[in-house]
Image 1 (cartoon, rainbow, N blue to C red):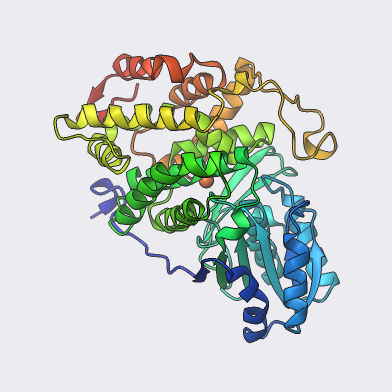
Image 2: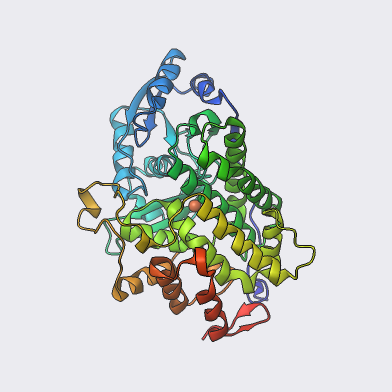
Length: 445
Ligand SMILES: [Fe+2]
């Protein structure tokens, strides 16, 4: 009997999380931990974190522990294939024996990619997109020192890389590989207190995206539920405060827990079309992943609500909504209202057109040099981005079946749609009725 026709995801996988150190002062333990793990010469992999002093302080700590350090600080946001290959080359050139990623998802994902390349004699990283394509579980050890409240990458087996070289480019692909979980994850809230307020807000929306998507995917992984809902609770209780005051240690420590356990929820429950949408827009415009999530989240929740109404009602309760006198539909709608309000309170833009200009990572050189620094896609580009979404690993996991037309409608909404902060999500609700909804699942035309 072909069970896939009866159950969409009959078999679940539980991914063991790496050992982790969490709390103030844990970053200072990284050097001694590296020595205890037998590391002799590590490659620091980072965007540079310029102006924070973090890299210099950590370098001193490692060297004081007898571990030599070479710094590679050329990682870009939305890491590109060439970042991964350059990191591998730096590792080989300096004859290192281990990696230390310092930063957010870009540093951690680039490092995971370089470890895969190192384990496969320098093969191109784009050969490893998809699920478990490593031929071996053996690759160089890796300490992931996290500095944001969004990524989760320090604890997941996932990596997301932009292909800039194959005929598919630009293509931001997802890898999920049991060979690449870090050896040791470090989450020191003191490091997050140097983040600028807009990055606090954007990365916070990555956390609520991880929690809400892992809880509502078709994977239906029971181990995800308590972590995801608690991460949402912590985010609702602390994100506004850390955006307004990143130096509130208690609130930041709570957001670090939210980020960390949302990453663990993501490791097993995986993600849906909010991440597909974010990957598509990032592939074409190289903007911050968390910013994409902040713009898309209310629209994606509204799109998915008919297919996961009870779960969105649970999310409303985790967000602090008193749902005792509400139906599940009313509670799910209240969750959408709450996330719209949260994005507004955190100063997140409403749609992509409302961002006049943004800083492209390459700052005028390289792969994105000829792209505009504001986002105004025409129909042909929306069509290409919709195709990118449909081919994304996360789309198949989404609670509501997505069509190419749905993807285009969602993209148009996020690019230039009516102001969701003022009008709610009427356009996407209208889309439900035009396509029809039966038994909680959209009828796909
Ligand atoms: Fe994410």
